[in-house]
Length: 520
Image 1 (cartoon, rainbow, N blue to C red):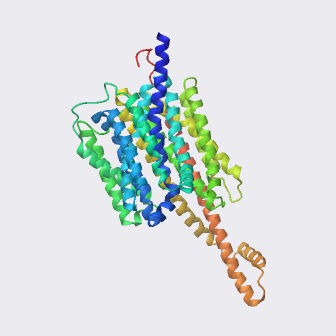
Image 2 (cartoon, helix red, strand yellow; image 1 turned 90 degrees about the horizontal axis):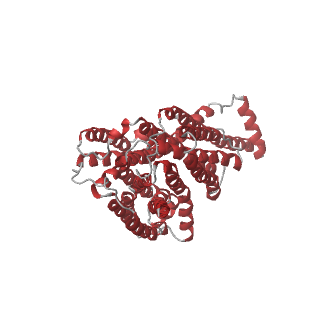
Image 3 (cartoon, rainbow, N blue to C red; image 1 turned 90 degrees about the vertical axis):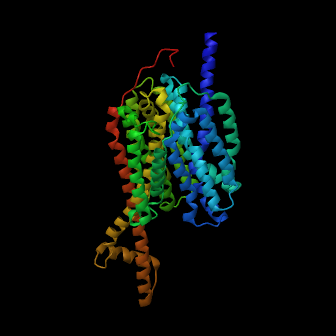
């Protein structure tokens, strides 16, 4: 009888894991699925490229606002009720996104989709950590990690295939049947522990206002800042000030509120604080590099979209293979050693990327991405397990909300940083190199002569034309070299940032020992 109960308990854990990860996976896919369809959406809805990017920004903004509120909303409405509401809203808004008749309606429904989807990551993570006993937290986070790493990889591929073979509307319609199945599974298999719902909680209106304005403004600044040339734009400057003031007021309010949206006292745990910093910079590195890499191979190496996807794919596969291994090793090896290995592998991978040149072949580019994927697989599991090791079950939803917020913000800051460094670095290197393009520079004279001979004009007039053409050709090559140096610099900085977080590993603790059977 006891064996049968244990088997039933083990089976129920996996059913719950599938139940919470199914909607989470489609939500994560939706953060990147629109990117490859943007051109089709723009043409279909008669919008400019800057207008069309609001379909991405609006989703990210509403997502960022909801994530930190998740724990509080779960306490107010009950976690199961809130999870079902979130999936229902995400599913319904996905349908209306597919039915959108103009850009304004699409942006509006994307906001609703982000509100529905924002809660799914922290809720699924907290449910997994509470469902699996502490000795199996590594495996639970492997399941969660596969979902959050798999989504950004498969999203562009799925979005591109659906858009090319059906239409962009179906990238949203495809969510509907999966969402309906998820709602049914949540209603059948998810239950609220007694400590989740707290009655009589007063609503922290000021906290909600400051958080929404602060994070919403910050996400717009990060998403649009580079295109608007950052603080030379009054619009970006104003949003940055509003964001900073609102977030400071939010922190003050949370310290004074009776029922705060975020329990900031969780940061008293040194492992939790260190883990959040490591997670922020790990995703800063990951998202920064996986944004730079496809741009590099397409713009500098002439790859098409398919080849660019093939460069990224093995890294995702390496992560998917590494995570279950790390989940098993974490009970046998010091998790600090696994985490340090993951950080060093990530830093080494981006260092290898900083050595790229314009003669790099396909496998030279593919290898560092695979190493980065391996490192992230070994980083995520021990990092999450140690970060959450000392958090009580009653505070798990609050802790996972903070953790997922900083993970997302790390990715957003990473993308904003590398795109800015790429643009500024190209300008700086180009200005320095142009200084050598003078008639008095011997190397310039030799290169100009060789280029003129290749072009092959004759006569006095022909020689003048050849000189102009040769100068243009040399300048184009100079621009390529300047851009290459900018990519090298951006990758190098990502590598340095990654190494800087290595000392934080020593502040983290392995956590409490597993409770005896029956105590979970």
